[in-house]
Length: 303
Image 1: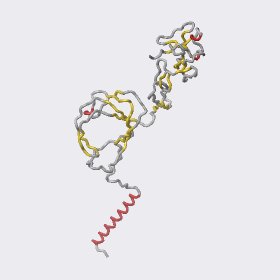
Image 2: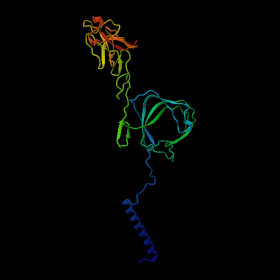
Image 3: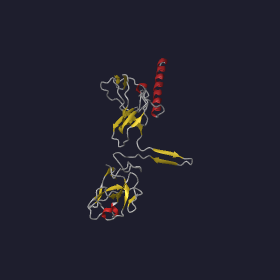
Image 4: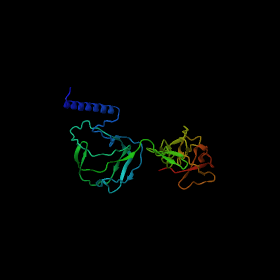
């Protein structure tokens, strides 16, 4: 039989065991979730940058930068060079597995999540400013930065995919318009992929595979012109491809719309800045006995 003091100690021990069992059961059923002592929210406050080859191209763009920190503000505008991105960056986070001999600081200030934005980085040229040496601290220690130079790159927010715009009217009808980016990289002329063109060829040049060239046509080989072009006599060569006995070639030109006639028995003049040339496909040429042969007006050859 237990005495009074021993009995009380036994009761306290049994209550402790019973309480532990109840708490263990509650945790197992999710009533009291256990949170680790050092649990932290996963913050995506780093940038993981990849080198890229950008297929887009635009002429140098002038931009104004307004840095958040006063010592990094610039006195004048900057120029984005070449119009091609050199890096593509996405938000990420990291865990230092082995810092080597870097003196990793014990405490880092709280940082902000970068959100879901991606970034495209461009080479940029900016006016030089005098920036004093400064001490910085990151997860690999504190150290001074000296000789801070000119701005080298600017990273702008970007999104993957094609941006669409949505407009809602009063009748709750939603329409979506997909933006088309013209592509004229390496093109002198021709279609830009969005219904426009990348330029027109001057003089008697024809647009062939996005390049302005003077193409021969006609002659004994009956060389055809590309679609949308006509074979005309080359002015000043004293040879007519329309003559059956002549083995001389003409040149391809873009057919104007409408085709302005000229010459002939009525001697119709061309507009200022144009010349009247024979159209090889009409089977008629003044030097072949066709005095009443009309021509078409085109721009003069580029000298």
